[in-house]
Length: 131
Image 1 (spheres, rainbow, N blue to C red):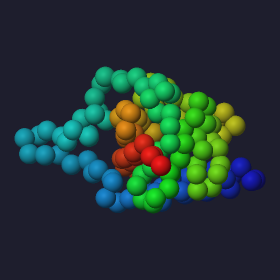
Image 2 (image 1 turned 90 degrees about the vertical axis):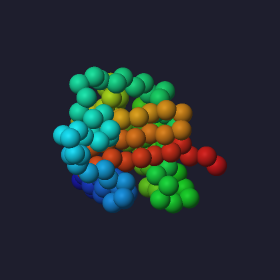
Image 3 (image 1 turned 135 degrees about the horizontal axis):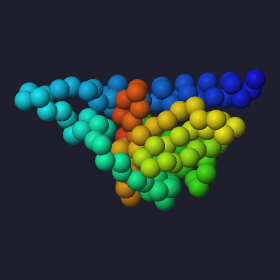
Image 4 (image 1 turned 30 degrees about the horizontal axis):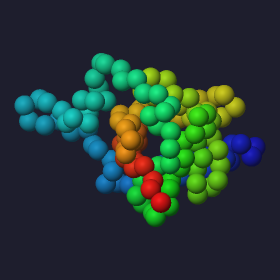
């Protein structure tokens, strides 16, 4: 029962942390072309990211603190000090609870300074946390 509450709490934190301004709506532009963010989500080519690309301490910029730290096999949510197991498959970050996937996020961009994730709730932009 405790795990269900923990999962619900983590999902609530994730959904609350996405600002309305950070969401990129799927809008068709004139000339029947789509925005670059939408094209990257819809492209047929699969980008392959490694755990080394996403490992580190990340912040959304909503507070002066870090949002979470991605390690080799888990994510530490700084506010709640809870670890959550994850897997990375090509361009998809999969959150696990007892080896059961419960949330998937597409990695759009992962470089030395920024991490951009997307799911059905919108796009989330993160920056590498610097002390």
